Length: 190
Image (tube, rainbow, N blue to C red; front, side, top):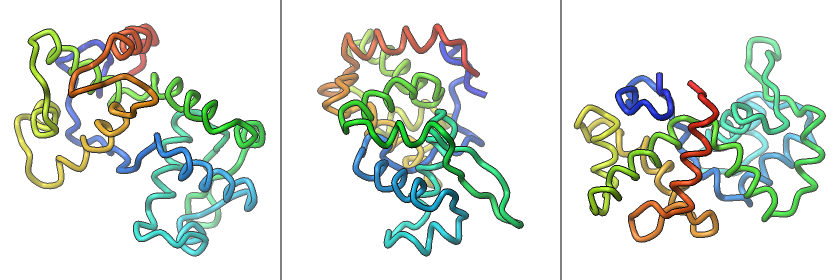
């Protein structure tokens, strides 16, 4: 369990990190529009409705958006889990790309793995060290890089490096990023 602000708990061992780019608003809108049109989607239906090479991308998008409170509920449809559009979705779909992207960033304040990575980047900044993906991966996987561990940190680092969000620049957390972490830690989410 990751508790924001408690760096002793910062470990990704046993935690599923969606391997998607939640800051890719076009992909988010495609997924949300599809859910809005269909009303609900099971894994099988998602695969049938999308032409993605990684058909699990849409499931991972829905999973994270559901956790962040984005107009999506989860239920069972027969034996399968289904993502269901709720009454918030229509309003979310009406947002501009800029507003939606800002909403994603705001809601990510409750996603502890993301906040933990940014918080760790503060340590690197305080030591005047530029980080690498390998460094961050080792920090969150007990010094290990093997077995797909880089795949867990790559999306989180890509989100943090989004130029429009301005949280990280030149492999260092920005003042905006530090403020963002501080605000997120006040939520006491774990």
